[in-house]
Length: 448
Image (cartoon, rainbow, N blue to C red):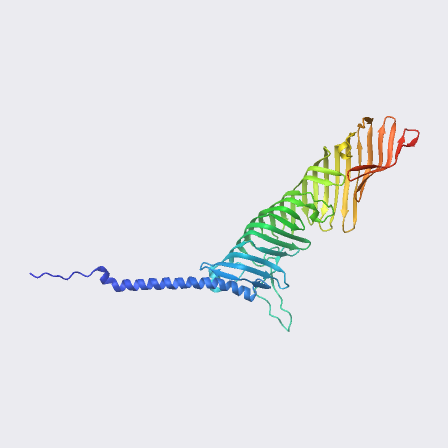
């Protein structure tokens, strides 16, 4: 009997050649895929470089110190600087990142929808808008060729507004940066800006923005702005909220020369070229020549460069004040009327020996374009005392001339007759008396 000492071949030995081929194919696929990813990463960077080099979309001069990309279309850059053709700085970004569509990377197709996500850290952005509040300064990749030695004509892309012709669909984050925006007769610089936005210029764009302070046409210490803009209709519409804290009214340039900070809480609606703002304006303290208000609050309405204030209430000299007015930001003009009741005469005249309640009517206005200015009014009181001497009432009118508050036709009625004065004034809180007469009903005697 013979014994077979040969062992049967193992499964690996029988399929060794097949397994080696499979492994070789897998390795080849991995190498090819890895190579393709490397190709995509370079392609993503090349896409950006191509846009910069050929000046597509962004006219002017764009420089950058470093750029890198991942195979998934994420591009990182440092020290990006964009200047317009006339030398205006449009962007200065120390570091940022954006994501582009992989299909656009492969095809080297460049458009306004190529970028789907953008993050900017501590950057500066300069937005230029036209009279219709449409963003300009971005041009088409298809420019007409110069003919007969004529200058090259630029087809500007209008990405927002009534005539928007290029869609944008992009998520944007702006972190601790500066945004400068300008339009005809408007200019703002916002600092310490943080913003998140989902931009869809053929549908609804939503965003939330906060700024630590801004200067320009309006100056303030804080800003919150957000909500939605609907670009679907032929004329886009606003649905936004607005909060401005510690606003400097003097920055409006309407001539009031007021630096006491104000706050605004409002809603923005209306069409994109013509925003309408409705809200509440408030001052903790508002000092005007000859009178100071506390806890001032009222309704405001802004439209076409004009701001109206209505149903305004305040406290002045421990009395109640109501007011209304309007401000023309384009004409640099304003007018306001106020009516006060139960104002304490001792506080108004800076003399504690005067005890009475005063009713006041005040009119203020200025037009810088026409170089006109007026502050005037009238007042009267009921019974009271002055240095323990009782009187039946006080009445008169007043007008501000430069830094002086001049009172005219002042009459103090006593039981024995009326005391009249041609004028007295308040300068730096001190009362300066003019000529005083005593009218007892029969004779007019000069007392002082």
